[in-house]
Image (tube, rainbow, N blue to C red; front, side, top):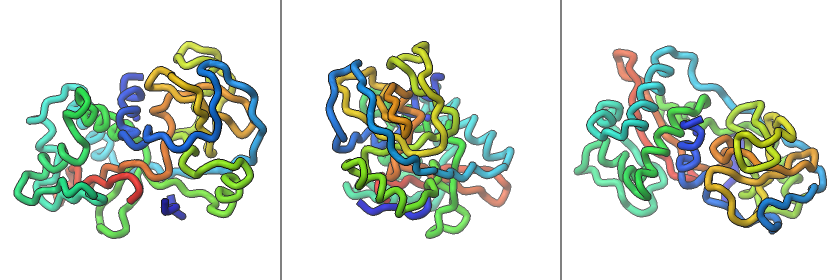
Length: 258
């Protein structure tokens, strides 16, 4: 898997299906433990992650709010105007699902599997709308994509993976600072630790509520976190661009790993 050098509470639950099918595409587990019985782990060196915020543009914030409402209501006719009328792209379309004869909104629906699994794509859209980070897409001037690629020290990360004997794909980073690590997989469980902007390791602990994961913090403490609040290095991304009138639209979709 290529590594990037430069790097969705109703909405949070939605981001889980978002973490976009790929944010939850679980990687090879570092270890296996019976569900609900988390042992203390060996501490590891924190590797800091910096995430670029979305543009400080009131129009973009308003667009994200509109997208969140459309995703909640699940009305396709209201989604169509939010997609750019031309030039929609689908990077990483390995299945060949893009059809130039279809409308941009139809291609978006195909790219995010809008109605699959009881409407998983709508959940994905809600998750994307909740993201507060975005960065420019160098290959397409004027386009920004979310989530932003995190910035981190590649050498430090490689050393972390090697020192813990894990695979890079079991590591996640918080979509925002102050994420709670809890004693149980529920929002009312006791907070064990508040996580900062650094990588945390997923643990394989057997069956869990679908919107929760078990993680080990750099301190060695283990607990549960809302899956929607953790992002993978190479998850799906949604892209936007602004037209000449200053209005934002969905411009394209990028599949995980691209």
